Image (cartoon, rainbow, N blue to C red):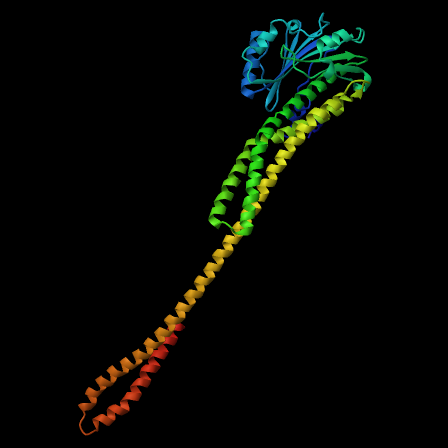
Length: 421
């Protein structure tokens, strides 16, 4: 092999090597720095519909159609970044430069109308983000009071103190939430990564909270099934109901539990995954406390964790109920099987008694058969003896009777042995 052949390893690569390498560099958001404005809309949507919508936007604004699950659409003075995830899609508008007002959707012009027109799915989260330059004066108290609900305001330093963020995580009259970020020493791509992490924290937090409403809605039904299973377990232990009635009740209850499990398992599993992602993003932000205000960690612990624990408790109760129903059903089926085995045993004993009676009857019949066969043989032999002159006929017949009986008995005995063998 030539030296060139030795250095070319492409022929030995795994079929997925190239795609795995590309995956490590996928979803790279274009860098931006302070000052700038951003708007992000998160929709719960079908992947095909979101791809079609993004392709329409690209054609309308002279960009390439979206080929996959990530696209960047450069515009005149803005950039649209689209990301498609497993069950949601995000649209992020980035506009560099300062703004006379902190939060105003009109800063993005008519592109917002184009984005929202025929938007597939339902909006789960929509946020306006303002990133202030380190050289800009800090927001005044009046600006903060005009932009946020002061009683709910969360303020903390992030990224090792190189930035500060403000948000009340409430929906405003225009339908958007608001996030204010002040650059206090961010370098290079740190601004992009910080905003991306904070947004991902909020997005994954909202997606995790989607599991709370079904858990709250179905908890009374789970409690009802739990009480019903407790009564069935008591009836099984007491034997107060017929077994087939209890089996029908248990089968219905197990079917109801299976329906609830199928209805909620994906949502509860997704909630756990999104909660873990939220915790990872929260740790990566490195939030530190600003005196007088709750931090992101405080807000997340107070709002998200109780909802996650509610979902975990709901899932655990459902799993426990299914296991208990299986145990009760197994116990009842064991009791039914034991009763069937007892009935089969009694039936076999009865059949054995009948067989013994039939055997004794057969033996009695065999005894009568010997007498009958002997009688007919002696009768036939008497005709022969009477035809022979010179012998005492009565004495000869009398002597013949025990001989015939013995021969008939031995013959039946040999026949029975052969049949037995």
